[in-house]
Length: 158
Image (cartoon, helix red, strand yellow):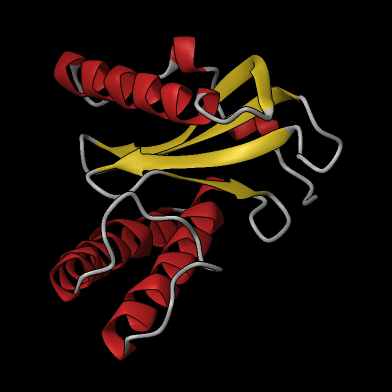
């Protein structure tokens, strides 16, 4: 598990967008991330939730401290949600929200490339859409946008 600096990650109760509308959108994304994580049988509950980064309804990254019901499950996980397939990520290669988003993009690109080349996606990050070329292209376009317009700008500001 990577060393995470919690000081820059506000509790979700404290997260604020640039305006009230964006704050409401972030709250909705938090509910989506919480429901996603809670859908797994190994998640025995959420202890705390922190906001990492986000851009309206496009993407948000949250850090959850959970009560795992199995020994092989980490108790701290990133969850990425938005106008993209939701996913949880371990913190091993992701000590901060920008790197968590970077890992998300890397793993989703593996899915896109497997679909494009006709390979199986069974051992890759789960995607909540059929592995069709149309879904792969739509996801690739979203990943390109997030990388170019959000992740690159986030890195510049850090």
